[in-house]
Image (cartoon, one colour):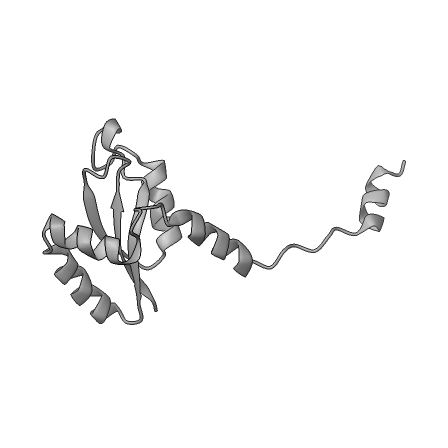
Length: 118
């Protein structure tokens, strides 16, 4: 099962939080639903700026331990190497997730007519 090591920050880039998860979209949704869980209201973690997809849980745990020990300048250098403008990567993830989901089939017109018929 794939795991993700990620770095999320607030809008002012004051805090860099390193995390490990198996479902990145659910984790981002959790941060948006619980904005004051880790910090106060002014420092909401809401901007995904870096993530790595790792195939095994053991490798992901090792990578998480390494990235967690990085100093702030090391984390910033790592982020800038792939995301120079510190843009929020969740927009691309949501778009990509939307492409993977098969659109629902159009409901049958006959079914609607039966419901409306008196």
